[in-house]
Image (tube, rainbow, N blue to C red; front, side, top):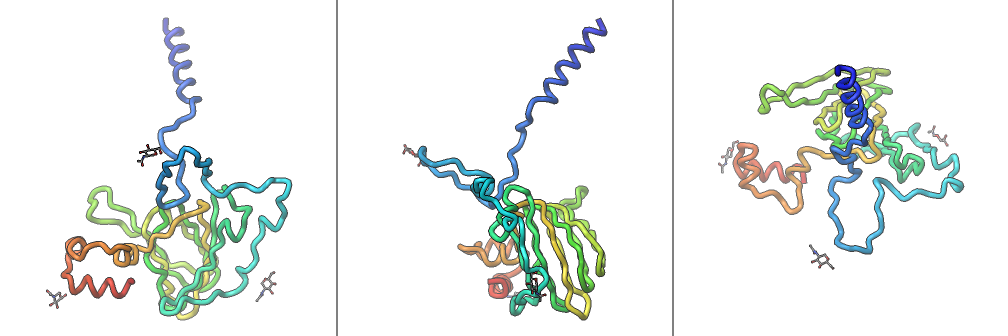
Length: 225
Ligand SMILES: *[C@@H]1O[C@H](CO)[C@@H](O)[C@H](O)[C@H]1NC(C)=O
Ligand SMILES: *[C@@H]1O[C@H](CO)[C@@H](O)[C@H](O)[C@H]1NC(C)=O
Ligand SMILES: *[C@@H]1O[C@H](CO)[C@@H](O)[C@H](O)[C@H]1NC(C)=O
């Protein structure tokens, strides 16, 4: 009897464990995906359409240029040279994206998050104050900050989807490499996303959302637009 029970349980468990689980969708590679109402529409893949493998070359898997500084964004004091599938076609479907960022002294990469990727950061040069915010499970009106000061050779990981800080607290330029575990990590710059939307979010909503008055909201809109 107990043997029979064991075999039955084992069979059911094996069946469940070996069945493909479709409990959730794969990660989308875009921020929104509006369905087209066209029965003739062709199939879209989660990435770019593939080249015939016979035509691939080593250069498809190569990028050169992270040995040189980019042009700093005026006013912001930072530059990111990002390498995506358009710059390195071999990255397609590999779930990776990377970049090199330089921050002028006392400059901040605008507070942001990547909805689809974890980011691993290696500091090549300089002193970087880095951190991310985790919602506090005990009180959703608060968050926990995990932060470190990094120097050359230090590595830090920012979990997927969390708001993070990258600030050059030194008095020399800071340079770091970022690796993302998505082909299209997505960049949501918090302040711009909220204050520079098109069409704009109504003043009323923003004033209530941030407990400010409309004059203050106008100032913020101007700064981030
Ligand atoms: C989608 O297309 C079909 C056929 O062209 C049409 O009957 C239907 O109303 C369309 N649906 C929407 C939501 O536009
Ligand atoms: C950067 O690397 C490329 C490719 O190896 C090379 O052609 C270029 O001269 C290098 N630039 C500098 C400034 O080192
Ligand atoms: C908005 O708030 C600022 C202070 O933060 C205050 O100086 C200003 O008078 C307020 N404006 C209005 C219209 O309430």
